Amino acid sequence: MSVRWLTRILLVLQAAAALAVGWGVWRWAGVAPGLALASGVAAVAGLRLLVNMNNFVLAACFASATPPAFRLGSAGWLRLLAGEFCASMLTTSWRMPRAVAGIRVHQGSTALPVLLIHGYGCNSGYWDKLVPLLDAARISHASVDLAPIAGDIDGYAAQVERAADALCAATGAARLAVVGHSMGGLVARAWMRAYGGARVAQLLTLGTPHHGSALARFGPGINAAQMRCDGSGAASIPSPWLQALAAGENETTRARIVSLYSHHDNIVSPQTSSLLPGARNIAFGGIGHVALGSDARVLAQVMATLAQTEPAVAPEVAPEWPLSARNDMLAIDSTHAAPHATKSPTPHPRTHP
Image (tube, rainbow, N blue to C red; front, side, top):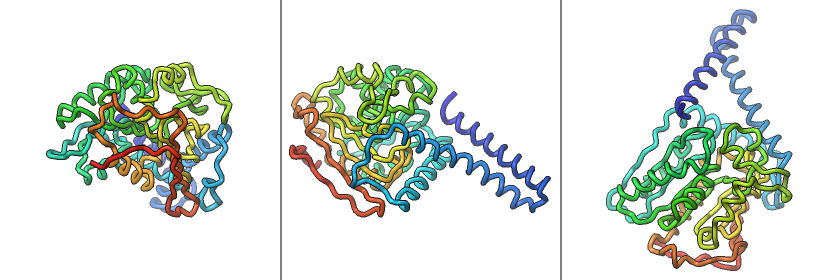
């Protein structure tokens, strides 16, 4: 069963639960039908809020230390919880049930095409906030709906290869950029290992557990087991699959990866699991895991990074950076002040198309 139909079924079940609660309130409490129905909807929403908050509690059990620049006050935590809850509700209840993967080509565009790869238990609907920005910039793009839901990450590589072939054929481009959320970033790396990364100009990962997440132990499926890590904080140990994936990469591959992540991720824990040696790492604060794909600050950084990608640079002449040389930190405080960047001492050469 596809994620789209699964989310539709879950929506029907939630609606039925809300009606049942509302009927019970009307029947036994004698309140007005409208108020009774509102009570049922509130009960279902409240249950989903509890699930969302439980993720934050579990993530805190295995969390990495939060740098001082990213620590939140009470108001910041409330915004974080509200933002993640709203993003989760909209994604699973509106975007995913309507999603259909496909290709959109902007004729005459000289921008590098972008392939979008969603994360665990999701589908192409996750990109509903990024797609309009790509269209406004006349960037051709394609998305995939990975299947099966709980499959082997290596098994998704063939689907990504077909999508990349179709996007390059439709646009006439020899190279492309890839944006992957959560597991999607690992899928992209597995695809590059299986098929070669020669045509990948840049890979942007959002909240990807490059070294695993302790919360993956609670998820079903082969892919969840592959994303697992044992231990907490700096002492966590990636799964054998993640270790093998890292062993198959070199400095040239890592130099084309940009990892965007949040120090308050409620699914990837420890949060520094998203730090990938040799890649450009960009940290945010006050953003939850699902909200990474709709947060204005993250999307602005994605678009800025895509604009800085130089499609004419061949992979074989890409610079080989030391594995710990490039870490850009975007400090977002609890008041949502404008981010400031502290660049690493080794600059990343870029030219604007």
